[in-house]
Length: 388
Image 1 (cartoon, rainbow, N blue to C red):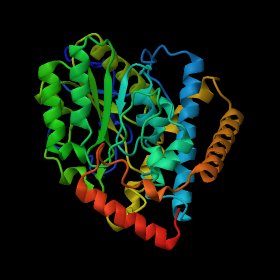
Image 2: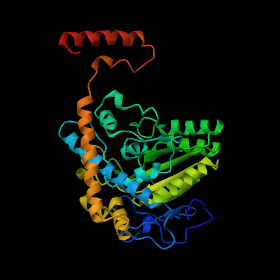
Image 3: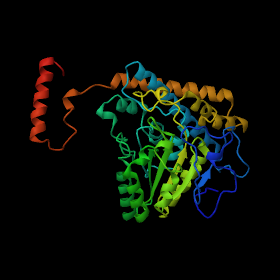
Image 4: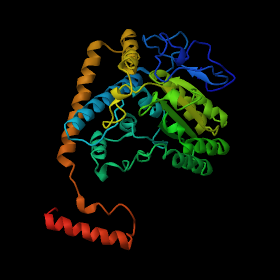
């Protein structure tokens, strides 16, 4: 039922591009494109309904764990945005409305699997074991926040658009050669898909049959550039098929579809069946980063329909309708998540300490003479100013 096997089409009207009502004209207008072998998966629609026969076999306690992770991600997002506006945090990339993409893409990963995130993947990082105070330290610009926790097989997140996808593919190729029975997941946005490095990575992965899952979070906007201005073929999953990579489109606001597609893609990779590209159709409801003002280039009417397609809203509709949760449970969990974030903020404020004298210590193992000269001049300046 996954749609990952091209010759076994899903017998359901589950194309997120043809959801009811149609997606708004916000860079998602499908031109006259033959989807061909690219299948589309939606399990849970925006009304919280599941078509008979499509519900995945996932235990209730796991569904509730995922629901809580999505709420925690949103609470973290909201608090970080507020902290940035108050001058307490550096530039931040919000992820409002993309919680299903973030949590769903790492849900199937075990401790021995790898994850290479882009800069908008903090919800996935929290799921993987990054503490929220560590992520706050990272976004505030402290070096201590950047390295992954010791027991987490993640790469540091990438700020340079698409630069992390080739190294992630290299790790996956090395895993195949080492007969490592695990997989790598790497994510990037639709804008990053215009970078040549990503297509090079997919070609390497396809030829090598590397155990990697590429996740394109297609949120419709490459900062201020809509999809129809950056791609002649707006079905980005077709690019993977062109390189011989198993490819599928998924309703990225449907957490059950994301979990299902990702599990099958990771299982394929672990079995030695090569890479998969998942194009997750979602929408960037908030800012590109806190340095951005989307009202300059995007009409608010394009955003409004996506409130009803909110991944948390539709998941809660289904969870409450099926008596897995009550509305009171949802309110309680929201309050608990908000308190967790506040506790993390308090820890961050207490422990985040600037270390200006270490600024040159993380560049080279053996510092060059030129940098050593600059370092000594810098330290003398700190001494004159009395900076410890």
